[in-house]
Length: 140
Image (cartoon, rainbow, N blue to C red; front, side, top):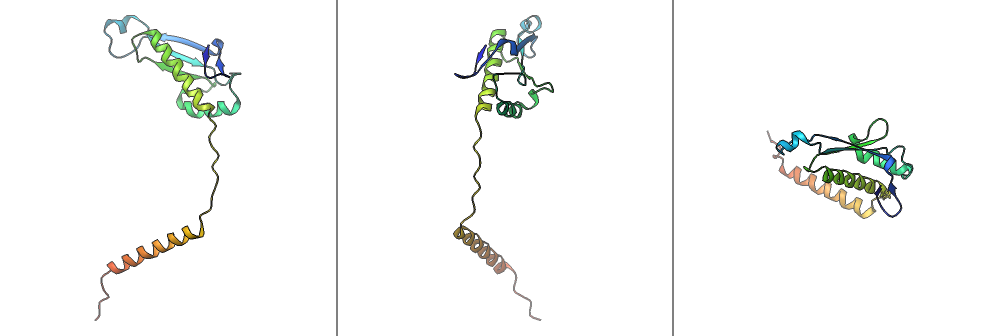
C-alpha cells in the first residue's frame, strides 16, 4: 500500500511490478540481476481517485498513461532492486500529489482607461521617433 496523503492510499491490488535487467554501468551485476522495476498502476480503475483527479493525472502522466488507463513507470537508476522499487513508488505518489492540486481559475480582468492611454501614448511616441529617423524628403 502506498500512502499519498491522510485521505488517499493506493491499495496493493491496483499496483503490479515486474523486474528486468537494467542497462548501463554495473559490471557483471547488470548481466545477472534483474534490478530495473516496471511499476504499473491501474489509475482509471482506482476507487481512491476522483474523476477530476484522474483527468489531471492523465495530463501529468503524458506518455506513461496507456490506452487501457494504467500508468507505467520504469526505473533503473540504482543497482539495487529495492531502491528502484522505492523510487518508482515515490515518483507515482508525487504524480498523484500533483494531480490532487486543483488549478486556480483565472479571473479575466479588463485594462483600465489609464493603462489604455499609456499604451497608446507609448505607441505614438515610438511612431514619432521612427518618423524622425526617416531621411528628409528630396526637394527637386
